[in-house]
Image (cartoon, rainbow, N blue to C red; front, top):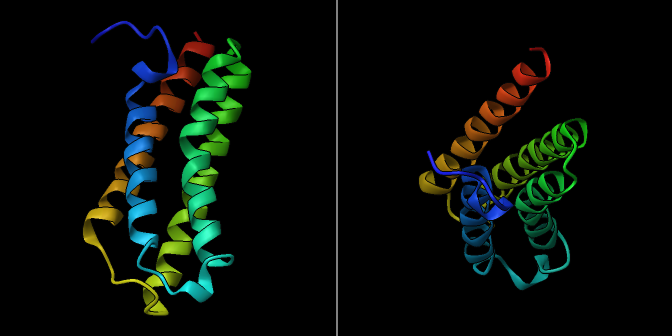
Length: 122
């Protein structure tokens, strides 16, 4: 495993960026009437995930880092809810690949949080 010098070296951030790009592409297909509604909310939630990972890492404090990772996980939950709504309302087609990206991001974030919590308790 390589050394983490910046947030860009974090797999969690890299995967979150992949997710954000995928959400932007998926929401391009949503109706124009949703541009300032669900489309905007989904994009903001998707961008919040890597942004909070980066901010937390940059704080150079384990408690702050954990706080921002948990916020990122919260944004991921928001996004999952918004995707399900968009799919069930037939605003965009269900996308198994996008769902897998959300689930993968959640697993990676959970692992990072758990690892940091374990270090804190050592």
